[in-house]
Length: 468
Image (tube, rainbow, N blue to C red):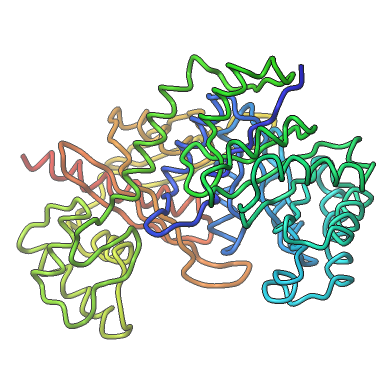
């Protein structure tokens, strides 16, 4: 019986109105890890500081699944991705290269020989850092068969332990795709010694069928999604392998007793994301920019209410004044930028709790721990906690110190300057009694920025409770 690895690509999907927040990605990763998927695939690094923290936090939260991160076809790509991923218990670096003439020319601007060299060099660079390296042959079903065979062989020779054949077009029938995989095995005998995977587009609503057909031809890994948009379904494949896998000698690691409950929760998260802003006048999707300098105080207050804020008349004026100063300098202002404005301008209060010191310990073989020391009325208060990543550990330690737990409604990250010593800005939104309180923190240390933002929001809650 062969164990088929189901590799979840939910977070890598791109679709209109579908963009998971930092908090949602952490929760989704934990759910997938608990479900027993073999691989959890993350997006690559675009903003080094922000994306590195996202990858590190998810890597620390995942205990059993492989965590995979794509690298760019460049000299610095592997090292940058590895720096963020190396704390994962089971890390994997992914190298994606186009193998069809159209994609090589128009997406990568490379000739076939140059693409082969780039793939081999990048795979070798990844192999020097990580033992688990995957090569994804993008648009493989539209490639010249001879070149596809060369690319796969070159990746294996360079150290790839997994090769994934991507049917990007999604126009093959199951029998055709199975024959395609069989012929590729014959053309590249080295594939018998590695892990071979497939990724199928659902253009003809047959991604699940094509994936199972390829499994019957020797494929041992399938890319799918817990919330499929244009790919195979984790839930469907797990059910097929559980019900009929014995007929073709295959099974999966998915916990079938957990499948229904976890899939329901995943759907709740993803459908809520796609539904955000539906029908809104100003915010059609999370983080989209719609407010301009021409919007009045009523429009800004209305968007603030949709973000969860219940601003007083005085705070509404302060927020609008701050918004106008920002809007006068740029064409449009996003809802996330409005979050930061509200955090800076609304309900500014004397700090009850101040950060004195903090020590964070994190690694790929230990749980993240935080030792936080706060000052309250010049009296030191300390707390130590374990968490799923450094940010979570710090927030839980603060909860222990204060004795109060508030729902973390959102946690946003963005870089405000560039370079190695870039400043990172965080906005933390806490919910208490149905009301949202936000705080902002800025630091070259993103964990410190998160702690300051959390304390800023916490101090607003404490101040308002004391006033009642």
